[in-house]
Image 1 (cartoon, rainbow, N blue to C red):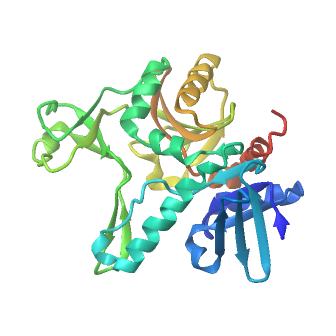
Image 2: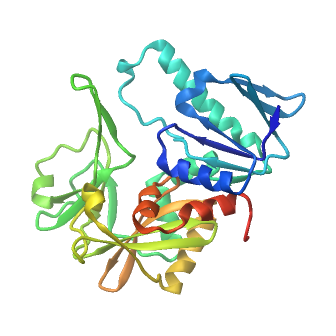
Length: 317
């Protein structure tokens, strides 16, 4: 039996998690990585008598004590954003729902440092709640409406339109998942749409702007400006993610304090925060509690993975 101090919850194809595991290995930390796409390979026992989680794979077994586990790096979805259930068998639906519940129930490790706790992640992933907390903490936000009505639309304006929650669709014929990005749409175009079926986010179009990504880890921040040929990106920068420049910059102290206040209000130890800089003024766009950052470390050499591992192990705190 191998007693572990840290648990990593992720998937086999998550590059960001690979980087954190490398740091934990380098620091000789006793941890185990459980991948949600390999659940059927494990034998898992939650023993309430001994207050232990036991994980076995092959001839190896690992034990996590309810009260003594030091930290959990949680890189797993809380909402099941997937294709239509019509594409899943009853057995697959049952498997997914029960393992998802199992992951949420890991909050029984009350003494562990969480990056991030799934309960807090669940709450913070709600975009309307994010905006409310950001505004309460003194951050600027774009003029925003969440609506299924055209009453707020002015034909002469440009808007950013995005889904209320991350939207994934499954093309049954092509057998591929489709992801929606934020779109720049004119008020005139929107007037031709039928929105009554579902609410959408409609925000004022900030342009020209410079997008900023701030990776936050327990009070430490890695701020980068996102540029294309030295200039801000029109619309959603994620369309050209691999072709952009990521330039470190100094975030004003006033904005740092607002971020600290917001992350404390959301009870998040980690977040990928998107800001837009317009005419010297920072606007909060969103925070992703399970946001990607591996590409930033890979392209810039910044040590986000080290900061996550250190925070998980409470080193340098």
